[in-house]
Length: 244
Image (cartoon, rainbow, N blue to C red; front, side, top):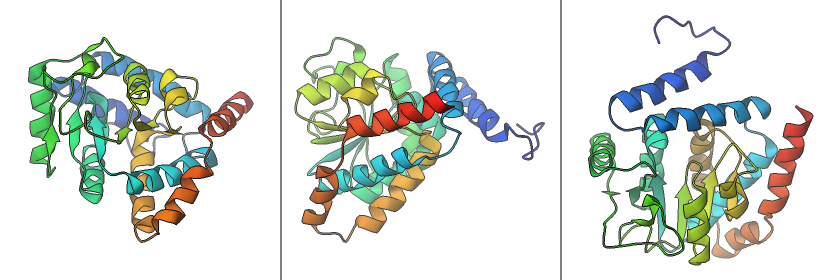
């Protein structure tokens, strides 16, 4: 994006579009991901293109939830891999959690491309789904998972919208932490904690929060989680959008 100066008021937004486009060109992101990104971008405008208090509250609780998890797993789709690969890798290392590629518009080639891309950037463990391991309560391609990844997890971090799988994971008794700019989506309403924010802002803040809470006692972390209401956070986000 050399032709756009950093002083341009839409520089950051245009840069993210370029990152998604580059992801499509390299085989990481599905072309359908361009549409999903555009939808999220519209909601980002409505929340002021900034991390608001409702997102900060969800990030604080999400950090506590991930630290309490017995076996957290970080789910990765094509858009997330294109936008925040290094942050996803850092999160996995911090939590000692595997990354697992999970795609709606899937192909073995794209799964392997994302896996190789993340490993080459320094990821410790990147799993891809097996056709033999399936989630319950879901019929789409997202039902295929890895036995040592999402299938085993008690807490799954889902960085971008994924309503059908989120609902299935919750029915299976797993906690789901999502990042979704649309507070009205199924993902947002079904998640245990929803961070209504742009993933490029949310991930660094979540990593920082995990580090700050790393020495907190389990009791302190449990208190943070118990005081959280995802329903109230989503309602606050909606109220903010309605004022926009």
